[in-house]
Structure formats: structure tokens, C-alpha cells
Image (cartoon, rainbow, N blue to C red; front, side, top):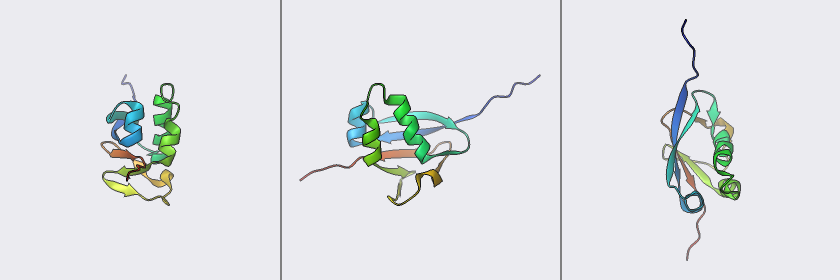
Length: 99
């Protein structure tokens, strides 16, 4: 009798600016379902993984821009239509100020 297991894909999430400072890391590998996982779900997953230690993370993610495999995701793009798969690199790019 063979056992059936659910396959898991992995993505790399890169954190910049406030996201990196808040989490204390610059990147992490995250397991995701092999199919049917989108960018809007990633935001919720990151908050779930880290919110116990960082209650401000959702606010940071809500104000951030995203890139997937070095391609910026437009502000007007529906995040539910940005499918993520195994090996994808996602960057959380927070607004920065300077002078």
C-alpha cells in the first residue's frame, strides 16, 4: 500500500527596509502548496507566521510593494491573480523616505 502525501513547494521571500528591520531577517524560505497559491495569500501567511512577535507586520505589508522574480507587481494588479509556484522569489519592498 503506497501512501499519498501532499507535495509542498518552496518560495524565497526577501525583506527590505521596515520589513527586514521588523522581522530581524533579510530572507526566508517558506513552504507553500504546490498549486493554487497567490500573492494575496502570501501576505496572510507571513502575518500568521510572524504576527505573534511583530504585531505591526500587517501594516507594513499593506503599505509595501511586491516583486515576483524581479518583476514589480503593479499597484493596480489584483494580487489574487499573481500565482506563486516552487522556486519563485518574492520581495517585500517597503516605502522609504529620505532627503
